[in-house]
Amino acid sequence: MIFRVNQGSGIPLYLQLMEQIKHAVETGALREGDQLPTIRKVAEDLVMNPNTVVRAYRELVHEGFIELRHGSGAFIKGTAESRARLIRKAQTVVESTVERLLSMGLTEDELRRVFENELAQANAKREVVTGRQGKL
Amino acid sequence: MTDFIIETSQLCKSFKQKQALRGLDLRVPAGSIFGFLGRNGAGKTTTIKTLMGLLQADSGYANVFGSPVTDADHSVEIRRRIGFVTEDKELYPYMTVEQIIRFTRSFFPKWRDDLEKRYLDIFELPLKRKIPDLSKGMRSKLMLLLAISRGADLLILDEPTDGLDPAAIEDVLRELVTLAATSGTTMFFSSHQLAEVDLIADYIGIIDQGKMIVSGSLDDIKARYQRLRVVLDDPKALEVRWEDGVESIRQEGRVLSLLASRNVDGIVEQAQSIPGAVVERYPVTLKEIFLEHVRSN
Image (cartoon, rainbow over all chains, first blue to last red; front, side, top):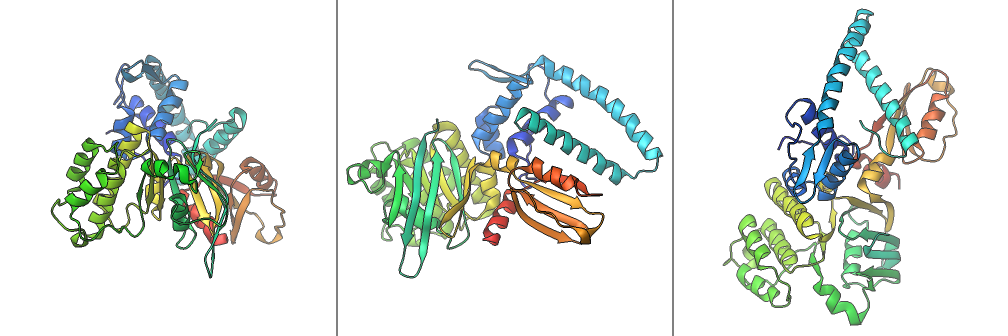
């Protein structure tokens, strides 16, 4: 099983699972048309509640990341790969920002905290707007 | 509309010395794995015994499958649909593993031979051994086998992994998850092991001093609770009347740590209005939520 969750983090497990699936696509471990493991298999391998897996898959369908084909399971959608391309683009943007800030004298830890805090704030705002837990 | 397999309202039960349940409200949705948490003596076992009809409540009501647990007309039918593992794990001492399985299955027309075989195999139970000669862990596994194989629609499990070693705990939890994925059986289980509840439960309830103090979907609870870390410019001059939703406040020097159970955005806004304050928010683990509540009471 390529997925893993950390139960000590306080982040809901379905969000962690969604994140892991996205990460698998970004790294190329899962590609367009690849089938995701069944709900039962994920639940058994990670020893987690099957409803949690169902919720993660449902949210990913909602985000257009995966699709359910009747009777045969869940598959990575083509758009997921274009997301991966988008992420590679983001990497170049972040790379230059990080370089600039480091050259201004910020330490790596300071930078990480600023970044994480901004993300948390953005996430919190989105929760208010949409009324649901945003992407991490 | 959600169907509740177990529903209690204002359940009260006193023993000679002690009020064990003080108006307990409990709702277990159909198909859920419900983790029932509480310290020793919080009222978990009293609740479970009341649900199984082994104790009678002083007031309030308890319904299982939509019928009162005290309803004599339905009691046999209800009990056929429930599998349970009790805390003391007592079984007839003169029987062997094989005999108690044969004895138990004779009461249950829906007995699942496939599950019986599966668990005998996975749990590595010695068929010819007498029950008193089994280890505590083996007795737990045997009770689980007897509870699950009867084809129950509801499992009530009092500390099902108590006395098991880590590998056996993993086996048992995986079997419960598999059962949930394949059968839709509702499971209500009490536990001290927050880590295992965190993994396999989708609903939880925390009982303290005979009352339910937190309950609901675990994801919703985790999304609602957050810890705020506020770094203050001037730690002495702080005088804030915090908004509703702040469960606890701790201050160490310049750092203020707040646990919010709801209205997090309002509280963040309030913290940000303190001159010079830097506010950060963090997710909260089930363990933190549990400890915060049972300690503050």
